[in-house]
Amino acid sequence: MTELAAELLELALSISRKAGELVSARPDTFDLNQKSSIDDFATQMDIASEKLIVESILAARPEDGLIGEEGASRPSKSGITWVIDPIDGTVNYYYGLPGWNISIAAKDDQGVLVGVVNAPTLNSLWHATRGGGAFRNGAPIRCNNPEALNMSLVATGFSYDRETRIKQSNFITTLVADVRDIRRTGAAATDLCSVATGWVDAYFESNLNEWDIAAGGLIAREAGALLTGKQGSEANKEMTLCAGPALHALLSERIG
Image (cartoon, rainbow, N blue to C red; front, top):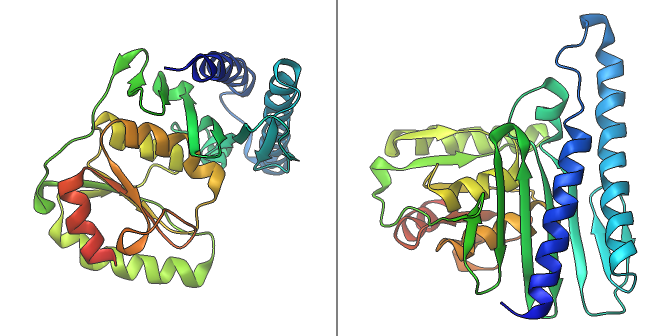
């Protein structure tokens, strides 16, 4: 690991822990007549988490760039840009479901250099550096490979757009008969890290953004998984597919 990667990783881990503590301060229950308050609370926590992350990064590295889901945008003067999702899986967070996470990545001109995903409700802090392997709670992890299609546990997600969801559900109907089962976690970075850890065998979803993929994608790749779009293209908004090489080839043919 280079000195720069080590510095960025230490910073990302520290900030992700602080953001995790902030966001974990969620009441266990809300009264049913407080639904609007829950929505507002979740939105405000998303904003507060990004504010904490951005301020912490810039305090340590004021020349770095920023890309954040909640609007943080700043060009880089140092060659390093941070890609932030302050609460990935906001709907899970809204309802008090597990799996939401804080996703922080740092990239240079060669791609993502450092990725950290902190999922407090799963007792999981994942990290990876480019070329340095992938880890969960400090222990090395590897994806499942090889894995037969009919024995594979496949994670996915659905678009907020109604027409897109209908198309996705139609495809799932054809796929579910050929795999072990389907899982729906509700947070892209957690799904990518689940592939890396071997909790699921594959994950695919459309309509993802850079902040959904950056940190978890590096962790999955460093754990031995392939991460692509359709027909082996780079993962993009149209499609993200992540799996060990053997299963990836089978699913790429089906999805493509």
